[in-house]
Length: 270
Image 1 (tube, rainbow, N blue to C red):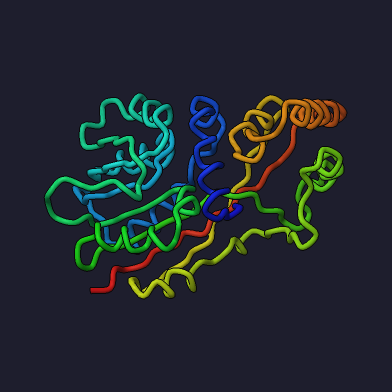
Image 2: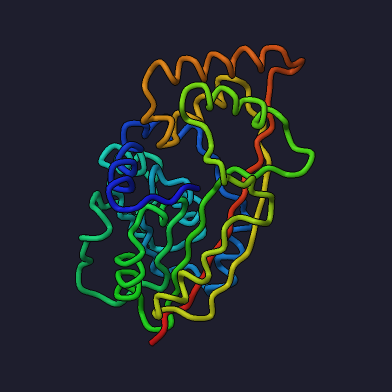
């Protein structure tokens, strides 16, 4: 997942709100194994108090709410927050708050057992995020984050390499120094966490899984990515038209996209 600095980060992070319903339909659920490892590494038990940074439409929230945690979600986008409320109807232990995480303040009470972010932490300025998380956690509490990102296994679907010529044509090509990420090699942010001086006992675990998409499903997914949302209409028309044309030549009309995630868990230093 791309990391953005200040102006670019602030501009792109708000684009997701315009795609709240598409995001909910198209973005993948996270593997149960990832959530199992999150509970193992943090020692979470039912009734634990969790704070989620940028819940989106509640992709991770629903799965964690089913495990019996008490969750407060802080979401910047009003449409995303509303979609999350709909998806979490019936979970009385979940509260959705529409606010920037950086300026949000909790009501008085004990600190959280876990502050976590699912495909959202990279939108938070590290200079602010780590300090804020530390302040919100109880002594011995944990910070956790992960992002679902595209990984390219050896022998994976060649579609993604082939379609790059169209990205180049519309001026959205990869930089010259871009490197394909393999399963198990999603960026490890251990050094950044440790550099904050606020957390220790940093654990990182890698996960990968595969999803098959037809043309409509894959284009729906692309329409939830900030870079594609920000494209000019003519760029999207050219790209999406070529995706449809190329997949139509395949016998099953589908592509295989591999997802990867690096789960980071760190304990609050007291």
